[in-house]
Image (cartoon, rainbow, N blue to C red; front, side, top):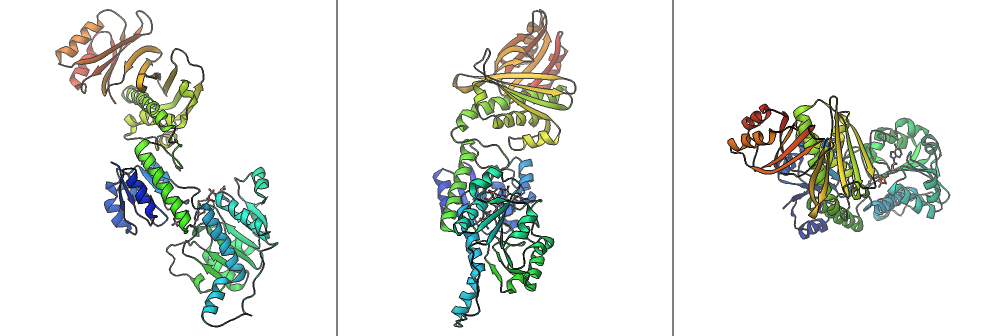
Length: 528
Ligand SMILES: NC(=O)C1=CN([C@@H]2O[C@H](COP(=O)(O)OP(=O)(O)OC[C@H]3O[C@@H](n4cnc5c(N)ncnc54)[C@H](O)[C@@H]3O)[C@@H](O)[C@H]2O)C=CC1
Ligand SMILES: O=C(O)C(=O)COP(=O)(O)O
């Protein structure tokens, strides 16, 4: 049974879901990185929030790990590139805490506008400083959103309800969407110059890092207020300190910090700063949502192969997973055969084409192509799976093409995989027969119907009398039992192929003997 580790403080709902789905689960929040590295080798899945750092070192110590599930949105604490390279799926829960986080940003905006935390502390201290706290109205003010995705657009909706003017900078926000959600789409410089309140809602990436730089702060309106409920690295904290101290900015509300946990910061000493300890997603509702969702997604993946909300892999819904599964197996086997033949005979792969004909063409093809690529690349590069295969193909400059043909020819459904090397082009086609069993139907355009076996021998020969007898005798003399035997040829007397299913691995010495037989062009042992 797959085993899952929860290494951050997820709602107990997640533990329950894993158990209900029949998985083994350990709940160990708060482990130190070294402690986590020590135990991670035993797990197939790792469920996290923002505290656990999934580094390359951690992944190196996790040979069994198949999936990292982030109960939340940001995956900047996960080295997604390394996870992908190791074939580990990374998934998040893109919506579960969006409303909660948007509400926190709005709460922070109110807290800033009316200095609520300071006023509360002063009142509780018995001071009754009614004249000290003079706020500003939100009504009619301009709210600038940097990032207008799920959270940003909910913030916009709430701010419009407060009768604010909302402007947004987001390179991926279309004019149409901007109109739909009632925001004015503007350029970054324009937004920085116009916002009375500026709120951040982008992921932390190379592009967004330090978007609120010293220079950007200098260009903000005098008396403007900044809210950051996204990620610490988006803001230059030292420059923010200077701007707040000098009075250029009237206030800042920060839920996230460059270094977390943030237990000390010069910003903490400033009156006009409101801070929370990364509480954006901290409501009972959001934590229940993300815990349930991540546990279900991880269990689905580990138990059925369904993939939702993966950052580094195409989605496969729970409904389509059972339909896709036999095709993935077919694609993997066709790829595996092509990969083994290429490894044995040909040079570098230039292109891989996957054609889908008939009923398969209606399915979600990206996972199938990924499975085919994994099949081709595994014999060449070691263990490759659907997660890392597309990246590895790209890194090696292999062109990948996927085509569909709706009408079916001789077969009601067919997958044809062609590997192009600098010396050769080889197509292998297969179909599904009764009970979704993969069957090979053609190699290099030559019809040959064969079931896949764990061990096979593929021979090409000249179509002349004498081959079959000598071949059978050679195997019999060596005590190699022929389990299945399939023949095909391009034309009488032309190129012929012979596929043999064996009960065990083909001994090297016998293979060498087969290669010496008259009429044999090549012989390759295959294993699936
Ligand atoms: N404080 C907290 O507890 C929480 C913080 N977050 C943070 O909020 C971020 C946003 O979450 P969602 O809105 O759900 O993500 P999202 O993916 O729906 O939206 C992010 C938006 O940022 C935009 N964007 C990307 N690059 C940009 C750039 N260079 N400039 C401007 N916009 C850019 C994208 O086009 C997208 O529309 C998350 O990545 C996470 O870091 C999320 C949940 C809780
Ligand atoms: O979902 C996100 O991106 C968050 O930042 C929430 O973080 P958390 O799970 O509360 O540590």
